[in-house]
Length: 326
Image 1 (cartoon, rainbow, N blue to C red):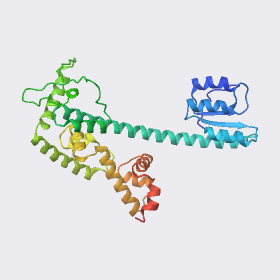
Image 2 (spheres, helix red, strand yellow):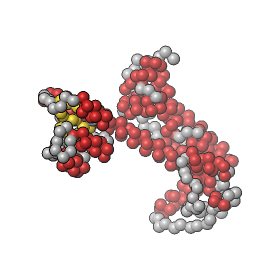
Image 3 (cartoon, rainbow, N blue to C red):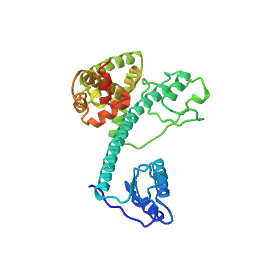
Image 4 (cartoon, rainbow, N blue to C red):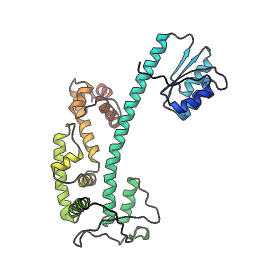
């Protein structure tokens, strides 16, 4: 059935020690055991391993036992005698549930990593704007709060790569003492190739961010990026790096300009476009959810359903049931 036997114990006290070592997915326990009964074992296990599935087997047809087990959150409460087929059915159902939970957890992790990646771009843009003196003090606090950055410390250590004299300069004329910048030099050993490549990228982006002319160029590049996204958002391989390559700028710069001008990240914009198209297909066609997922750029129908519910507040099936009337 796909299970692997992890161990057995004669009582709850011994079981707890083995559980901490083996960390199984499923625990099957009798309710009456010496030293520690099944309910107490379940209580301790679920406190320490909340995702573990517990099946309690009992010869006591006592509703109070069953109620306590349900309150604890055990998966099943089975009364003896138990047939082989009944136990196999329960284990099959639990295995399917664990599989579904693992898939959803993977989607959540993937979504969280994507959000973190683009949040880093937004924070980079914020630091650049602060260093260049483009933000007022109230605006600094406002953006820091939105990015969940705590800027209430007495001082910070910030390292800058210096550009030639004609490059951008750091503005030290902030109006509050705790926002003044003190000169510091931080050295790090890098290879010549790494240094040349890094400085070249910094200089290119510094020039773009230098004046009002840079802002106009940024808006022009953004229009190109948005046009490309609008034409290719259903492509599964669409990514920030791909769009940046198409318009010949760095992914960091594109992300910063995109967030600043559009008020949302690249991922949020693409996801929004895909969800709008998905809703249209669900309302106007008979395509199944999996077919809609492929049509809007998702290879994995389950991940599509996860994103749809997260962004729209309901499953594709529920949306179709109610959306056809709207």
